[in-house]
Image 1 (tube, helix red, strand yellow):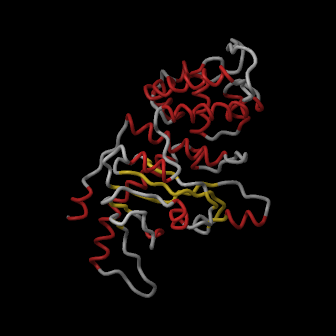
Image 2: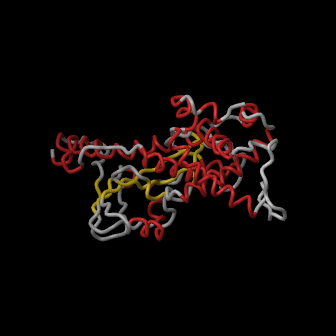
Image 3: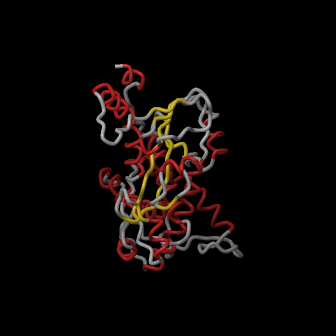
Length: 314
């Protein structure tokens, strides 16, 4: 059986299996344990109203709280088959399935307590940004693989011509420190990035700058004084001149931050590989958790980049 107490002694292996260092895991564990105890005080493992006082059985499913958190982090990071997961943790497949959904909910609440969740609507984003002096933002679309639906009409909506497969899509806004500020609703793979951004009606601070790619041509965040910077798009039958190529290269050097953000989200293989969970709303919540875990890791391992103005003015 895979146990936290044994794996934590190997830092490299622990990081590979959970995406967190042991220190980060133990800090997150404090929030996870508080949320777990609160949940169990009022609800049963199946989410029903509790009638008797909660007590953890020594022979129950993963009796230690640290093993519960390790279980869900292990699953999200590696996206294993539930039979494989059950075998690794010495439980049955149905028990593993229940654990995934229960522990996922508690992990979400723990990340909320750690204030790592991205905003999901314009009001929450405005409140979040009012507490910071950030004036530099980056936006991009992110797609993730999903199983092909058996319904033909749904198939057509979920088919992404860009990826040549069936996907879900979100638009992500991040700041200069690569923290994810906003995550849009999950849309079908065929939906255009600009359409998702237009629907979101994101409002950024006045006099801020938003770096976009050519998938957002024509998009303007809410706010009259927001500068939009994007590469020059080559028109049909014409080539970019040397000055346009040079400027595009500078913008790409700045926009690489958002590509690194996408890699940070997809550090969890459950959003990098094809997700097999089909319950309504589960894919959206998994994506939100992946973004929150990216933000959580940045608290302890911040990324540093050259000054944007120096790059653009060079």
